[in-house]
Image 1 (cartoon, one colour):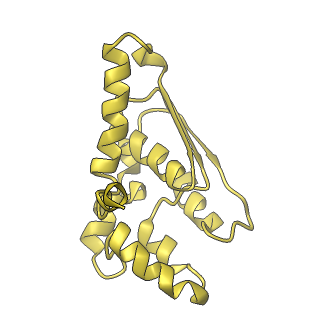
Image 2 (cartoon, one colour; image 1 turned 60 degrees about the vertical axis):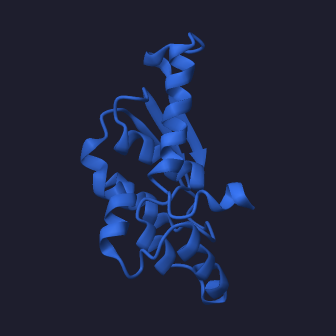
Length: 141
């Protein structure tokens, strides 16, 4: 539980830094060619892929975001009514973005899309029950 709790409130910050640090280690160790590093993920991983391209635009050659949220506030606002217990969990794990626009704007890659320099492939299901298609539509516009 300790390791899980270390990520509380760290979306787009320390959790993202861990991914960047792993890439930097792999490059410095000669394991990978820096010009060919891609980032891929689904759900939170999709968020991390988009955030990687937006927050650290020189680290990745490209990214793939599959059903990843782009705006955390709209993600949480769209959760079904029977997810009230999950909203409380998300407030601890992610932060209270429903009430704090500054936190949402800092951590949501949608508000940093202008910094993306590399190609981003987006995959989204129209009927996804957790991450609405609008999360991907916001990016593609």
